[in-house]
Length: 246
Image (tube, rainbow, N blue to C red; front, side):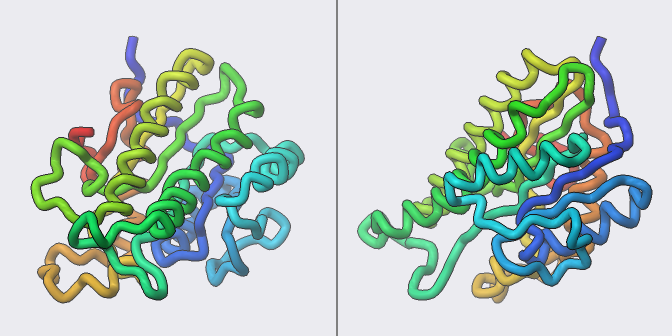
């Protein structure tokens, strides 16, 4: 019998809280679940209102992060929810590619490192700690542009490829962990275009009604996680909970 709706989490792990959406999610989960323990990870000192005793500063793109995070989590309450916000679209001297000639090894490797490996390393740290009877939800913030079937515009090579790879990671985790845990929901979530540093250079062509504040996106993401059912595991979901094709 399929279960609908997620139990209220007693412990939540948020990774990537240094970004605009990550900071907003810290505030949103604290508002909705004031009694839950909140664990946070960021690459640099976070501007989010975090508990220093339950915050870890490191780069999840570094493979050395896996044992460090595992040890850190091992001394704390097992998270019931893990939300991974790590992602990058542009950086100094790099903008999304318009054609294949613009796609460089350096840009693709950088995109894969932050958009995929950071999620892989965290999953590797969490996996040994999971308990069969403890309900568990994993959400990787992904992007609709990572959908192969939905891609009708082309371009943005390194970002699209890295997000497609992230989506495959989520699908694989949902199968592996779904076999081991009694209640496990693993999803990728597309938050929509949010007014953060990631989207800033590309907002000029976005209608005001389609550009969301970090608070709006955080509210929607948490609502999606609250309403997950067993049938949602392994899917790429829009911010309203509808499914996006892989």
